[in-house]
Length: 215
Image (cartoon, rainbow, N blue to C red):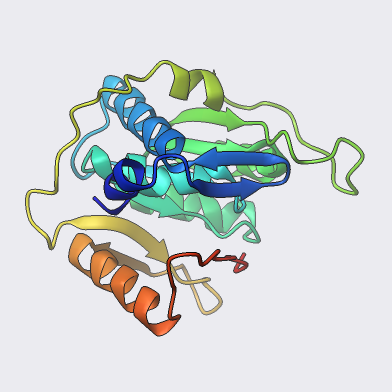
């Protein structure tokens, strides 16, 4: 709802800055709808878990809107975890889809081999990640490419609100330093209230540009 309003009121304002890329709110909204549509066409619906292994890239933002549009649950992985802990989370979350940045494909490939679940795996190739980086991109391990997957979706997707404001929107895990990670479910109501609270607490004004730096 928040993104839909922004897309209608400020369609041409810049919503996302990623390296040299600039994405407007209208484009952000369209891509989120297409992602939701593509997920739905692959059978993703209420209560299903979509796991992402991404840095602070546009697909991470799109997932935070596109996944809830299908009434599915978003599970964002800590990119610093090892394969065994990731595999445990994939199984515990009963992951149906994994979206993984090639930067993390090596550890994800190992985790998927350890996990019991066999999700649909989608590769994201970050165009802003330099080819000469100290840690080069890994191989493609999925059956689909993220950009092609989004492009296959319908920009007119008929998304819907959650059936109940207490329905799950995300599934998060502790780091597992004292045993297996513990899953924590966040609901739509809590996410909406936290968005309002952060806006007020940070005193965001009409022209604010918010830099999110937490890994």
